[in-house]
Length: 477
Ligand code: 6PG
Image (cartoon, rainbow, N blue to C red; front, side, top):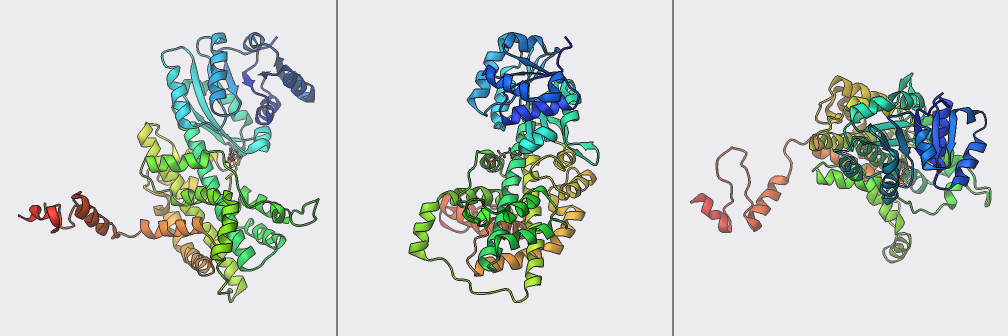
């Protein structure tokens, strides 16, 4: 029997869809699931794709079915189960075989797993896969981290199953060990910010202007035809226009306002902090989810403190909507600039040499944050891959100048009317702080020196590093 090009363990929703995608693109795949019934059902349901699938009931058969060196995708719950699965798999593997973790792993786990195989003849790929169920089935964006040789072994299969943007595959090798999972984490951090900002704009339209869900859906639909064209905008329109079959009310109006999170957003922020990168809009988005989860505390606080009253209605509705659209675009630029800045720092810290234009390129289709906007980011980074920050590239500095006035007006409106807009506000403050050559940390340095003799540098370069207070007086002697 012809051997499979690749194997996959874990036929849950993502694993099953990814396997069908692999089979459909003409690749032979061997599949295995801990519970044999799941494998049998998957195979029975595979219909015309059965010819490309080798369903395996034992690990021995699974291993035999794959062409060495064997790439084996592990698509199971992130965390300990991956380590357990790797241990179960190892005794069956031989030289050059590649275990591929395609879950949403913490890149630090990926680094550890990669390292644990060093010196053995096995290797490991940490692979970020974005696009949800639909993406896995018909074309995800795939971020690969591992050795270049292991990438070469899987390149053909992964290229065949990935999403395409204008015919270009949305998959690439991004660097050694944890690079793929790190980039996927930052993708999710940006995803959190994108979603939070859209939700804040929704809040301004709902609670500030009193618009219905369907009306807001209409506005988002129009924006989706312009520069905000993106998958998240598209699904927000659909969601807002949908009605609940049970109550007949708009679906969003019956959904509890507490959002869950599985960790990738939080990891983005933790890693940004670890590396000293200001990712304020992403931080605000993660904090927004935390605050959302405190439903009963918020309800109690509203009773005690009251909800701020609306003090102002926009005078010109059309102009206000135009401002909102530009404000969202401006804030989005801030979030993406921050995400890319975190990746640039990580690239140095972990020696990955992350290719920024490639990352933007493989996010243009297939993934959750896919958009036209990412094509603009691709060209900006292609022209200057080592630029300090996206917002100082010629194209984006121009865009910031065109849109930040609107963001300022919308943030002011939200603040005056007590409408929470933490991510929009953070993006604005980030722009304002980043482009101010003379900030205010001179005072902080003086304070630190005053209470802790921490010292400071002087603008005039004079070699005196303490102020004329307390113990610092010695410096003037
Ligand atoms: C993707 C998504 C996917 C998943 C996230 C959501 O890129 O396909 O990001 O990975 O939906 O895990 O994360 P939260 O559950 O933390 O919102």
